[in-house]
Structures are given as C-alpha cells and as structure tokens.
Amino acid sequence: MALEFLKKVYKPTMTVGQVYAKPYGTTAPLTAIGNVLELSLEHSEDVKKQDDMTQLGGGTYAESRRVNDVKLKMKISDLNVVNLARATLGTMSGIEAGTVEGEAFTVSALGVLLPLLHIAPTAVTIKKGTDKATATAVAMEGNYIVKPEGIVLLSDAPGLATDDKLWIDYSYGEYACVEALTTKAPELQFLFGGLNEGSEGDPVIVDIWRASQGVTKALTLINKDFGSLDVEGTVLKDPTKSGVGISQYYRTRMV
Image (cartoon, rainbow, N blue to C red; front, top):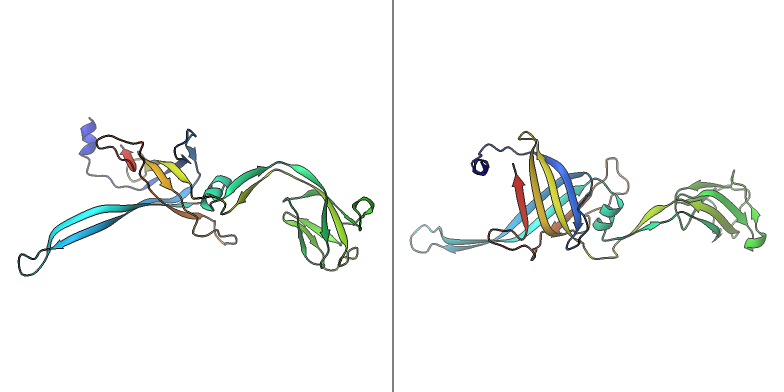
C-alpha cells in the first residue's frame, strides 16, 4: 500500500499548520512558537556550465549543479518573549513583582516624563524635599499623572518646581525584559506540522534538523496593522544524521 502514495499525481497544495522549535542539540521539548503567517525554504544553486565547442551554434556540453544554500524564512505574528528574544538576538529575563521606596529624581523641567526603573507602577506616592526622611507628600491631582512608562509631571503643576528633589514610592507587578543584541544568532531545530487544505487536510510534516535564525528585518513599534517578525536563517548540516538516503538537512513526510 505504501507504494500507492508514491504513484499519486494529483496533489494540489495549500498548507497551514503549527511550527515548533527548540534549541538545537538539547533535550528540550519542541514547543509551538505561535502563529506563523509565512514559512518557506528557498534553495540557491552554484551552476557550472561547459560550452559545446564541437559544432557550430554553441550550446551546453556539460553542466554541474550544487546546492550552496538553503534559506529558512518566517513571518511570525506572535511577538511573545521567546520569539522576540530570538529575533533580536536578545537575553530574556523575568522580573518578579516588588516594591520600590524612594526612587530619586531631580526635576529638570515641568511637562516631562520621569521614567521609573520598573514598568506599570501602582500605589504611587511622591514626596518632595532635600532629604528622603523629611520629604513631604505631593498631591497627585494637578501635579502629575501615572503612566506605564513612568510619571509625567504636568506643565502647570502648582506643587512642583524646577530643581525640586523627588522621592517616589511604588509597587509593580511581574513582567518580562528582553535585552536586545546581547547574544549570537540561535541554532534551532524546527518541525512544521502542516495540514494540506488543497487536499482534504492531509498531513504534511517537515523536520528541519538544524538551522540558524537571524535578526528580524524590522521591529515595528507603531503600526496601523498587526505587527510581525520577518526572520531568515540558514539550514545547516546536522552531523548526527547518517545513513544511505538520510538527509542531514531536512525531510518531508506526507500522506
């Protein structure tokens, strides 16, 4: 019966599915990376030709073709922490919830932002004075507003002035931090669990044994449409794969 699959001619293809990844060469499990809008493997060749010099009119007497590169391309729409870290060559960390007492600022001007050490502050109290122990509270109304990125001093704040020394107490919840461009491009193992909508939802499974993933082409911060990460990588040789007819690069299994 298996030979019947090899004889199939009618095979229109339009695939959807899930992409899984894990660090190459580790025992970590393959984990879904989220919604991938585009996934492709692109081959480039080094072609050498020998002219036919045996007769008039020319032509090609011999030809040699060797694949010199296989590119992996993805458009990832889920900008979760793992995808963002991989696509920005970043180091990710989780920040536990906590409180801050007396984060210090000197007012350089009114109408400006005071960016806090932690994001999304709550239970904010601002005190004014040269010494933290003797500083007095500043009323929020009319003087400042609290935003996720910090404290905005109002331009007409009656209780604040240039050169005032401020001490800010606040709480914050847990959050993630990605420090970009702090590591090298990751090497990953991928698996595409595809379903062919062009052929009754038949499964198409593609294993990519080892591939690098480069930095995203752009990280759009303000956009009228959904954001995505456009990343490229190179499919690399996996020396752990061996045997006659066994690919060290990738394989496709399908019904």
